[in-house]
Length: 353
Image (cartoon, rainbow, N blue to C red; front, side, top):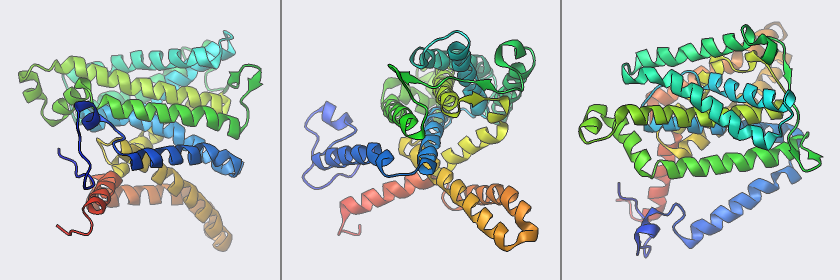
């Protein structure tokens, strides 16, 4: 699809045409944005830094889900379960075998990817609702395995203590130090996700999403690319789970519930499926909205004392459900679509057409 560019901006080579950052102004904005992002710990409190860390971890998980669902068209309701695989792999390697966080991180990603391949096998035969049910099985099987047969290794229903990441002799135990681990990894994973969908693999994913029969006729190995999409999605989940484990410093099967998987799907819907920027918008929007809803619930419970417990427990899910419903009805293409409209109108200004 042709992209409108500012007047006087031309692509003189294929490399320039494929570049993510095209103009000098975009480079300036990118550098200023990154400098501002990494300077946030200097003037934000621990509460807001923890929120940013949470956003960073959620963003990695949603990027993986967006590659699978938004680009390849395969539905998954088990992203939180694959995060659990990465979290417990890293926890076991670091807490029980003495590995460093940096060695456990790729192992967590790989283990989650392998498990994702197993649960992606039904995609050869089923699609749509039936594939959603097949991936939903992961959300029940994996936590059950962690809690019961593997109790001797994982600790079962009891929390497993996880060591803090270390850089040399420095232990990253604060929200500020974890920020400088989580956010750079989230930025790198965003960059990888953006580039992946611009490659031949990404084009194969999109062909399968649009019409898998036509893609197969054109020579695309549909089953191979479906499994690859599940693998990449689960690798992202494994990285997110590993970061979650070392950020929380303790993990439990209850940290990776079906509701979390639904949250990730909701973030993808709100942001816009099939868009890397949409994943960023959706995660930031819903995580900040969730935090504001908690503050609003506490404030309202102080006014309506008789309804205090109800407001604190139910206000968040009610607001979340309403937001998802409104986006599906009025803006099914998500915030990314609004962003594209804004960029196009800015480039064409002052010409209304």
